[in-house]
Length: 268
Image 1 (cartoon, rainbow, N blue to C red):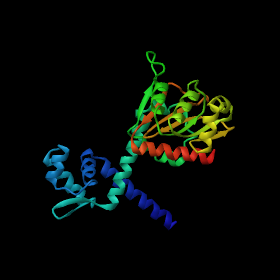
Image 2 (cartoon, rainbow, N blue to C red; image 1 turned 90 degrees about the vertical axis):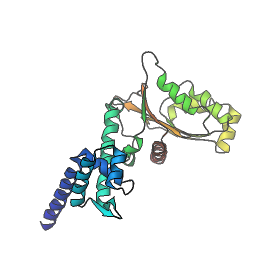
Image 3 (cartoon, rainbow, N blue to C red; image 1 turned 180 degrees about the vertical axis):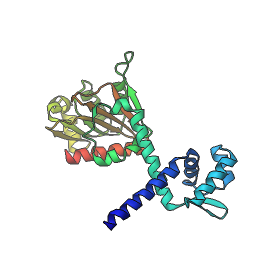
Image 4 (cartoon, helix red, strand yellow; image 1 turned 30 degrees about the vertical axis):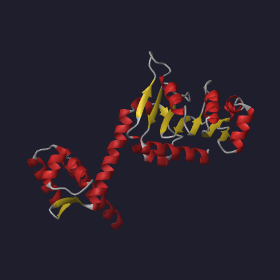
């Protein structure tokens, strides 16, 4: 019973703290500055463009609430407040990723995205949604094709066979690319065995081509080509959505893609 009361008090304290911090955009902006480095009030004003009176007033409130402290004439963020602030930012970014790309996530199957990847969804914050249009119906595919051409390292989950994939893969192998594929058994013959025999055998022998073929439906599209990644999802009716993909060349996004690829490869 006492533990329950203590847990409730702790939770209540955290809620009050988060409410105080998020109630003011000015406070969040100040914390954003101090999360980078210690600053004086004047330096915060110069960086943010906010009025001196607004910054000064909220710095005083933050200091009084023990969120920041003064050292060597500059304000620094308290360690616990730093944790609160970074979690607030991550939560805000997660919401933005979902709302900004609502057409991508809504009514789509994300079961192949593991818990860790979902938890780190903020790594996709700087991604771009590419959508096919009535004027450019091949926009998503052409984006994928452009990423693959002249890549030196390709990791890909292909849940379906596009007619151009065999020739694309063959050309990149001829150019010395290292390719790691996860595909469905149903497309193995038409994708892999159509690559020129000597090239395929030599590439598999020297490790430039590795293929993991599985019986289970993959229900996700993923490529990481050098420093670019793209992600495609299946709809809830199990049909692949060829009209939209999420792409990014941001380092965190590409690393997110690598980790998801490794998870699928090791757990499929």
